Length: 201
Image (cartoon, rainbow, N blue to C red; front, side):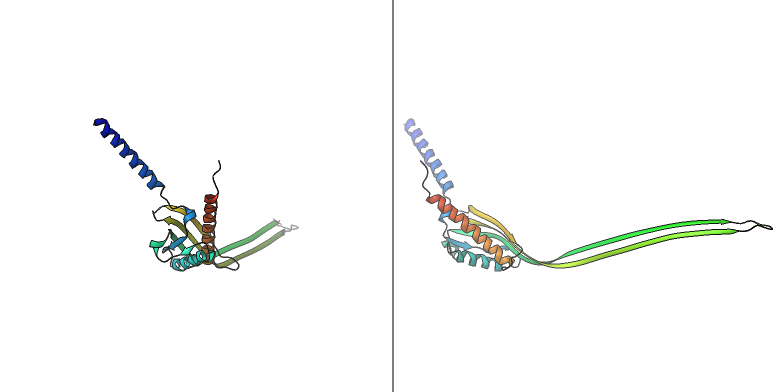
C-alpha cells in the first residue's frame, strides 16, 4: 500500500510539473497575431492623435485587423507617445580687438646766458575693434513613441521605440506612426517566415 501511495504521489508531481511548463510556454507567438487592439497611449496631450495615426498605419498595412474590442484581440498594443513643438534658441558672439601704442619723449633745459632749452616728443598709436553677434530662434517639431505588443497572457512579445523630427513630405507624428507600423509588420513577417520554414533534419 505504501509503495502504491508513493507511486501515485510521483505521478501527481510529474503531472503538476508538466502543467507548469505548458502554462509557461503558453505564449501567443508573434507569427499568430492577426487581430490587434490599440490601447490608449500615455504621454503628452497629442498622444490620442498619434494613437489614431498608428491605428491608420497598421490598418493600411493590410496585415492586421484592428479591433475596438480588446476581448477579441490576439494582442494589445500599449505604451506612450508624445508630439511636441518648441522653440530652440541659438546665440553666437565674435569679437576681435587690437591696440598698440608707442611713446617717446626727451627734454633738456639750461639756465643763464648762452644756454638754451629743448624738448622732443613722439608718439604712435593704433587700435582695431570688431564685434559681431547673432541670435536665431528655430521652430522644432518632434514626435516619439515607445510601444509594446502584449498577448492575452500579459506577456510582451514585441516592442519598439521610434522618434522623428519630421520629413520632407510627412509630419513628425505621421512619420513615427509609420515607423511603428513598418517595424511591427517586418517583425511579424519575419516570425511567420521562420515558423513556415521546416526544421532541418
